[in-house]
Image (tube, rainbow, N blue to C red; front, side):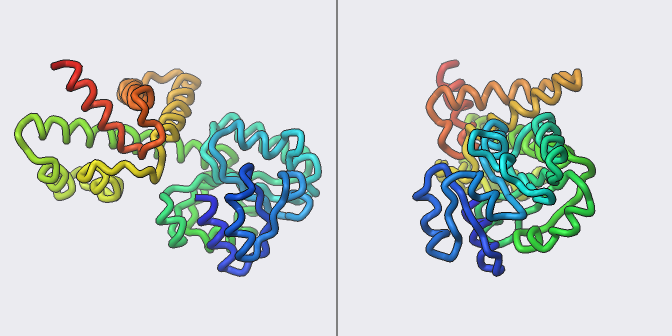
Length: 281
C-alpha cells in the first residue's frame, strides 16, 4: 500500500524522501526520483509533511518518538499524516505529542486495497484539524478521496468499525459457502447467488475469485485483519460494550492463524470453517 501511494505522489510531481525499515524495499522508489532516509529522524529533517503507513500502533510510535524518531527534530508546523490503522487512544496520544511540539497530526487511515492505491482510488477517513486537512488536500487528491470525520481519532474510529464489518462479512460469506457445499451446491453457485442477491457487495466481488479458486495470495493478510478485529474488541471493552458477533468471528480468525494461514489473505478465514467441519466428522 505505502509503495503504491508513494508512486502516485511521485507521478503527481511531489519531491519525496522515503524511509523503510528494509532499505531494499525502497530501491524502486529511489530509482523513480525519491531520496532515501536512513531513519525517521533524517526524513523529518528533510520534510514538512510526513506520511506514515505501517503495520500497527507500536510501529507508528517508533517512527514518531523512537530513538531515531521524527519528533526529535520535527520543525514547528510539520504535518504528520498517519494512514496506518491503529487505536483511537494511541492516535490521540500522538496528536497531543505533536501539538506540544507545535506540529499537527491527521489520522487518515485508508479504505481500499493495493489496486485502489495504484489507481489513486483510495478513500481516506480523516480526523484532525479541518484547516490542516484543507491545506493539504492536494496530497489526498493525488491518492483518492477524503471524508473528514471530526477531531483527532475519529478517522481511526471510522476505520476500525469499517474493518470490523469487513472481517465479520468475510466470515459470514465463508460460512455460507461451507453450508452450500454441504447442501450439494458447487462453490461457484453459492458465490454467484450471494453476488446476485442482497448481500452482493464490493467486498464480495473482490474476494469471490479467492474463494472460488482457493487462491489466497494476500491483498490484506489475515494477521492484519486479526489485528484490526482486536482493535475493535479493545474499543468495545473501553466503551463497555459486548459485541457477540465480533467475539465469535475473532476466534475464527485466530484459529486460522494458529493453523498456519496468517500470511494468506484475510478471506482464508474459510479454512477455519473447513478445519472445524473436518474435526466434527
